[in-house]
Length: 220
Image 1 (cartoon, rainbow, N blue to C red):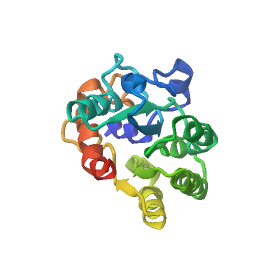
Image 2: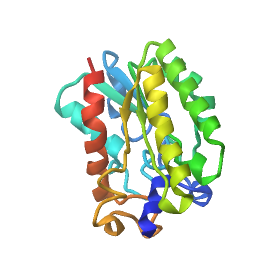
Image 3: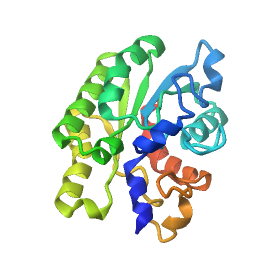
Image 4: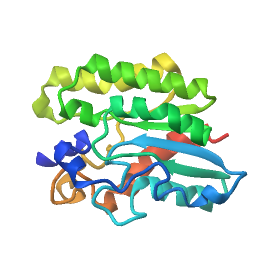
């Protein structure tokens, strides 16, 4: 099933086409509130609203939900299309210093697999990002990803397992597979943009539905 390539996030070609995500992204409208607590999302195209109108991605939907519930949180969308865990790791220290977040969501790893980077490198980068975030006083949510079956069963199992391994070792929250109900749905083909890589706007409420039950307990 071709749409399962969406499990990989954005590729190099998609990265060249640009990203709608940035460090003060579309989901940071509440930034003017000095009293607001902060969630920083460090992700790739899946979180950067690639191919979507501004405000349709799951991160923007999250901010609207937080506002509706009067949670006192704002969201900084620090996601970049095409980013890898190495890129996120290099960007994270500045993000922690600038935003002093209470919660950090790590949504990276798909592009590592797409580029054939060593699993040990992906695991080490996510581990270090979790540790840096915790050292800065933030609670951490690790977002799991998967690869299509054509990568081979062994590689696929090892890749998916590394997110749970990091979460368990570092005591973080875990979304086992952020595209559950999207990439593995019966109507998966209909859930993706024509490139068959990036989810359509109508898939993003499902993505938020995977993240929210795990994120909400961290908003204490």
